[in-house]
Figure 1 (cartoon, rainbow, N blue to C red):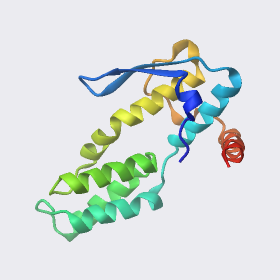
Figure 2: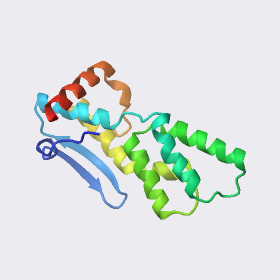
Figure 3: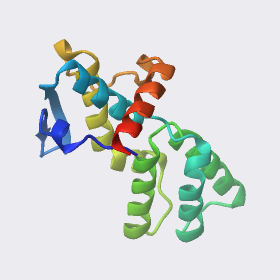
Length: 165
């Protein structure tokens, strides 16, 4: 997954609330061409993984961690809900949260526990998207990711990949 090039990262400022581990605001000093490239990258970073991409991570959790008073039917239902809901989030965040949980916990996680691990980075990405889409009011963190035309985003990402190759 592409990340912002260093030349663009230097022009994007994120103020962070360390006490709550959440971003407060995002501002940028990008010209229109740089903003377009950054927008394509951030939208790509927010693209939902889809169920197929998170099945492996959920299967690893299920195979490795202990279950809390669940029978096989409950565990199957847990896996279906996890795959369905986590598939709506970016794959790199889901895989990172599942991997961190595997390394640090004994029991299968709830959906809320995994989302809590992803929330700081997800909020940062959403705020960056808001700032890049509408610089005038860059603060709302709960921006709908589906705002941009998917075909336009795909063309921008393809052009970016060509430039980076």
